[in-house]
Length: 330
Image 1 (tube, rainbow, N blue to C red):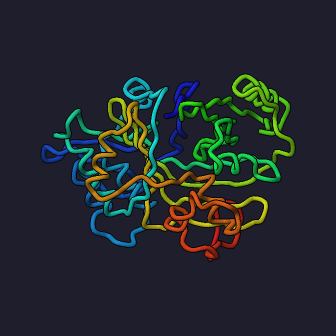
Image 2: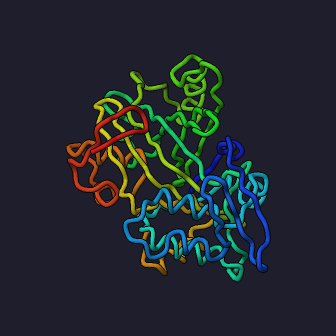
């Protein structure tokens, strides 16, 4: 279960290509200058992803986001702020992803159809995160061992606007995750005095511990996200995940035919879980930070995440070569 202590952070706003909506033949059509085509709600998700084995998940997620009826950020906060929530991760092939979206967005869906988060016309958002850890990877190791007093420290960047947040994720005694965050502005650094003071206060108040020595960037993640929303439930859908080990220069890219789906609900199982189960999907033991390091460091003691990491990134050794941030090749 996850407890978020601050309001839902705004995703990036659009920098162009704002969607138009119109009515045609009694069906809602969404058009967008960036795609040059309209997608009919209800059938658009199936057209975007259905039956196209090997299709790039980034394009599938983007097309699907603009095929689904939108919902505003204000409505998301009202309908599914989910200040206390349970999270489950799934590694979903694009074909199963299309079936999931089609069922969840069907107007006849019990409890109402899911909608896609839209901010200033944009529905697919680029995320960049940098995680911080000690030289011995204390945060990674604490999660591997399942220690109660564990934490993750990261900077999150909403690429489309440049908005930055410093975030601390703590694990509570009942299995809940508590997220604390503060905005980064100007030349603020996650290792600067302000953030270190914030981190020190948070760790001391939650666990009675000091800030660990030697914190430095350990892993970065980049991906594209769309979010489906219904009352009391959010489903984040991430594609094109790239994890880079910032200490070795190695990187791995998620299988282009997989979508990382995270279901967030106030209870243990939501509508998306049930649809995914019906499609033969089961939750994966996977997080971007731990799964990424498990793939990038085959010798690390990471059996807990190894199976899911291998499915996501392939067998050990399939690393990428850097060509500048966000650009990698085999």
